[in-house]
Image (cartoon, rainbow, N blue to C red; front, side):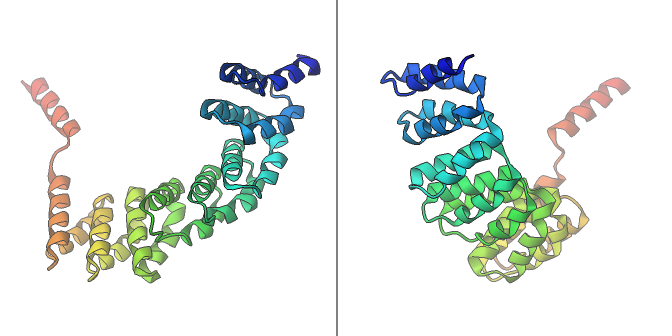
Length: 267
């Protein structure tokens, strides 16, 4: 397609008809011409419609490295634009953008911070872990959940930092670290000792979080820690531990199906 055709499509991004803008954005994304990066970004920052913004974001993502400079420049603008620029960078996944994204993980605007944390998780670069671990213990439940999901996406690489936070952090940090370890499941096995100690804490919320995390980790060490927790003087802790132990001893549906199949074969 000629540059004249691209110019016509870019002009359609200003059309009052949302469907016209949507089609133009889609076609420009399919063309993926690097020269369209700046005008596409300019329209994205101002676009009022969610669906058109989504397609414009996809279109910029299709440009790859050609779209990085315009997205970087936008990280210093108002929160709405910062959020959208981070969304673009989370599509491109250029490892060189880590240092641009990382400071925004602690942005004062929750939407910006959440998108930056998500983008860091998408990049998957372990250099981001100290930044992310430093955000443990946020008062906001939604922000905590986003950060937990992002940390879990790093798998076993996140365990040493989470274990250290569980041992040495403030009360909110320790609770959050225990919950995040629970999301890691078997990858969190190296932290069983720290979780075992946390399960005996006088902080009931921390102890319950630690017990829940132990319940997601298979193996004899985790099972032994749950046994100890089931004898806790804290009724909440002992009840949760007992329930997790009982659940672990119950045959799964798959086990039941296998047993039934073997019985039929034997009969």
